[in-house]
Amino acid sequence: MTQIAAKTRRIVTASALALALGTGAVLTVAPGSGEAIAAPQAGVDYIDLVARLSPAVVTIEVEKGATEVSAERGEAQPDFPWEEFSRRFGMPMPEGRMPGHPGRPDRGMTGAGTGFIISEGGQIVTNAHVVAGADSVTVTLEDGTELEAEIVGVDEATDIAVISVEAGDALPFVSFGESDALKVGQNVIAIGNPFGLGNTVTTGIVSALGRDLNSGPFDDYIQTDAAINRGNSGGPLFNEAGEVVGINTAIISPTGGSVGIGFSVPSDLAADVVAELADDGSVERGWLGVQIQPVSEDVAMALGFDSGDGVMIADVTEDTPAESAGLQKGDIVLSVNGEAVDTPRDLTRAIATQAPGAEVEIGFLRRGEEKDVTVTLGNRADLKA
Image 1 (cartoon, one colour):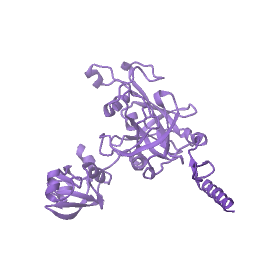
Image 2: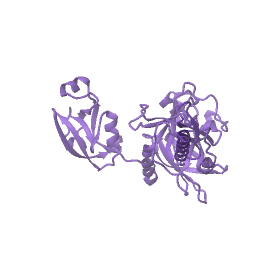
Image 3: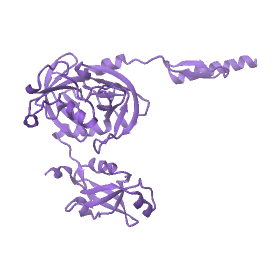
């Protein structure tokens, strides 16, 4: 009876575990333990999911005429937009033209990228470096239909752009998901147009989150090992629910081809930028009017806290929101709207993600005393005037 009961318990335990894991799980019994354990699944396919998502992913071809700048330099310009890609991420230039673009540099530059449709009316998201400065933009749908596109807006700070097409009929589209819900190790799917070949599907996992490539104040990239190559720029990174959780933007590679280190702009950042670009073609960002620097170890020791805490104001510009609010040189900013600020990038992002005219609560340290002040932000665009 005892042996029978033990076997029964073993079977029940294995059955319960199988139900908990779902029908795709495979169970084995650990040698000598009698415990049922889950074995790795033989493989997962995304056939139905890809069939549903692919029609919303488009190929983007751009053309940029020869410029006075290139004439002044006296040199042929590389294929657009890979010049910008190389500049930002140290990627070697492609040799020759992209497939399907046999033209010569003196007749203008051509290049290819990827985008994805976010509305049945024809709004499309891509990278800013794919379409910025283009004289013409052509979108090719999965069925081969070619449509001329209009650039709605470009935001170089986040490398995001919105373009639009008129198809006459409702187009298939995809929606943004929550990138904040991503976990390292989670499966993701990239669809894009590598090397001008057309829609190509690759899969991988989330390798890391919050990567900073030192390319700007909004660096917060999703790192993935899903293959991303030239031409994938602007394409979507999907979760297994078919939601866009990232916009594929960059790779790090000694060869220019994928080595499993790709980066995507998180959807939680992208969705807000896309909404603003779609509204009026521009993104307005808050402005404080200070020069900042990290808190040095010497200053931190003198104040009795870790050097990673806070951001020091190195200077306050005249006639700025910061000066009006009473912030001074030497103040150490500790928080914005209750969120801790540890690095200059944290402070820049916390302010720039607010709209001009917004009131923010800034917590800071002055001569060892903690203080708070409310600042009405200006418009960062005023700096360009």
